Image (tube, rainbow, N blue to C red; front, side, top):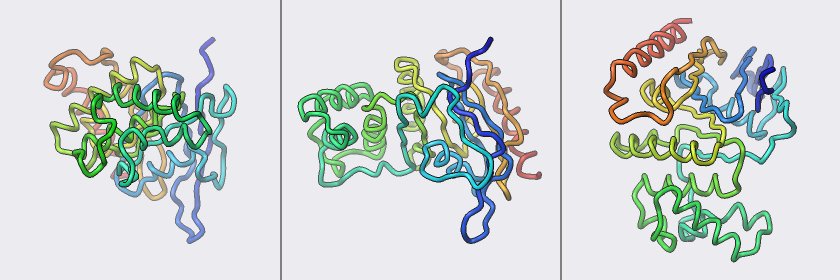
Length: 251
């Protein structure tokens, strides 16, 4: 018997107070330890779906269930912008979730320093956000999300504003972090290439109202081997996802 999913969305719909139907009839399961990307056009409800899973909003219909119990291990959330406190160092930003939980300063700083090291920022603990590049600020944001050791990491287009070289580097680092921590990731992206490269599955969404129209397994080795981005296997998987996305946009 297969283990229950970590998260299950069953017939989920969201209608906002202004009458906008953001999601309708969404059925989707997220398995423990997997990397699931949500791919779809702007306005299809990808960010709304993340906020449902995080418990920031409630569905108008259907349910968001955690078959193994209530959000085991907690949830980390990385937004499109790094959202760092400009008056605080990288270490203080990364340790904030622990300090808010009442963790002693010494322990919070030690765990935050370890989280910063895990994202490649050893030596930058005392740096201010204004002294960091966009990619480095996003690394601090990821460290802050992981410092509580969540079982589920939600990421809302965290690399969209970065240049391609930095984005590729962060994609590789994110896969390494997932392998090391075993965290389950749900990742929102507009990029077919990013979704395919990162994921064990890609859920393709259509808009008006948002719904899942296809779920594509990505049968590629993990971690990704050198040269995978230029391989025929990667190109074929991207073509499949791009075709599903075109069909979703026409639906």
